[in-house]
Amino acid sequence: MFPPRSLIRPGLSVEVIQKQHQASGQRTRGVVAALLTNSPTHPHGIKVRLTSGVVGRVQAIIPD
Image (cartoon, rainbow, N blue to C red; front, side, top):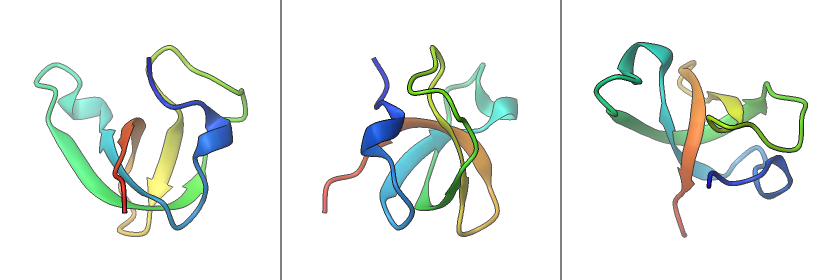
């Protein structure tokens, strides 16, 4: 199960999977700039934009 929207906020370090990497499972680490999914949960993860500009779905929250 992926983290719900309620646990994700701007400034949080996360691992996302980009659309083009879904088949390979390659993850990208970054810091959340904006949440793009409005629903509380999503079967593939909440979509976010990272500060680097990368858009992907949150797979995991990286602990501080």
